[in-house]
Amino acid sequence: MLNIIYGKVDADNYIFDPDTFFNNQYDEDWIVDDFSKKVIADIDKSEVQGPYSILSPVLGSISTERLSGGVKTLILINNDSDHIFNASACGDNCAKWLIDIGKRKDITIRLGYLMDFGDDNFDITIQNTGRIVHSTNELDDEVIGKRLLHEAE
Amino acid sequence: MIGKYKIEVSNNRVTFFLEVKRNITIIQGDSGTGKTTLIRLLSDYNRLGQSSGVTVKCDKECVALIPTDWKQYIEASHDRIIFLDENNSFIHTKEFAEAVSHSDNYFVLIIRDSLPQLPYSIEEIYGMRENRDSQKYIKAKHVYNEIYKLYNIEEKKAIAPDIVLTEDTNSGYECFSHIFPDKCQSLGGKTFAATEIIDPKYNEQEVLVIVDGAAFGSNISEFMRSAKRHGDRCALYAPESFEYLILSSGIVPADKEVLENTFDHADSKLYSSWERFYTGYLTNITQNTPLRYSKHKLNQAYLSEGNITKIKETLPEMIKL
Image (cartoon, rainbow over all chains, first blue to last red; front, top):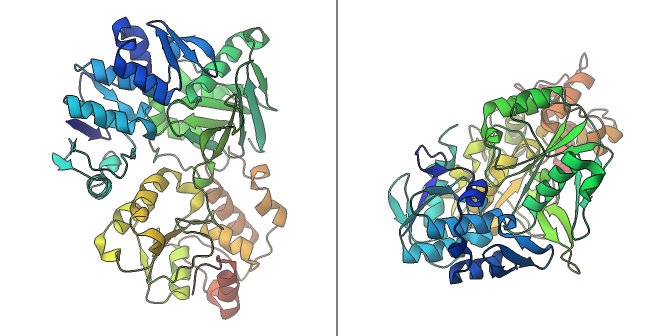
């Protein structure tokens, strides 16, 4: 199940900057697995050549550290269950991949914006309130209606 | 700092184009569109200059490398365009908002989270778009497209509001209550716009929400999500500010050049947003005149039949009165 904490997170295992965390913590096996290859192809339009090398159509051959912040965060979420990652590093084009991971395992992420999860039904637990939502309208009722992104104001 | 600046950042593989004209510009959008690459290129250029192989074309110095003592750095900087991405956690703090509010620099913030403590404009939210013909050319384009400052409504579609919601109970509310008698309500603050219209009680009504576009940037994404479920029955009218509306209406002798090229007049050191600039400008030019303007209580002279007609004529045609 995909669990989302909207707004502020107070937890020792929260990673605010997944980009830097990835650069210092990624495991080479993560890069060459099927999920990572698909995500890198879809989001960064790039091809995995090896654990340390990616072929980008724009930048040419680049190191793994130069993948986009969104891709790095998705790979972390897929492989590291010990941390809560700041998924605001992921754009709307990462939403389907978060749903995909959430179908396979329990994950908890943080979001500071209203990611667009699309028109299809999904299962997401809003951790702030404990409610499980199944559509964008239900999610908006909870997040906008209960001002979850304004709690600190 | 004043002015409008074109920025071009490139190496031999990729070129970024953007233009900034206010103290705060926001870049957001999908992952993998090159936002991090832009920061990386600028950082390389800041460290190594020409030796980096990066070319930066801009009339002002563009910087992406910020030291740990960011507050002192911003205070000591003048006439710079400072790029920051979401990995800088201090962007969310009130201290940063204070440092930006009267800074002599422009800021380009690459971040998806809204920043409610900063008064940025709907107009200055951009997403990175690849050139249709080549992935090598990436240009910053507006995220929120508007028709005469009217959002969530298609061209040629009219809205005849059953209810009009304004940000607060200041002068704008008094004026719109006059234009839309018995239909006008205050939201009690711009952050409540999205929360209010998500209420099913508006499902069968045509709703017009009027806000100051110059400072509504942090609220627009939530608002558009709420408005989407009402379709064309809910529209956002977001002129720069109510004061801008008065200045453009011809009621007061405003300098057309100031309104058309506000970026050359709204000094970021004096005004944290154009909304503040227009309030100051209107207050200033109406001092010691029968039209003396106060933001908190509307001078009744603005409600004369002739002046109300001029304000009505300034509203987009798609708003049916």
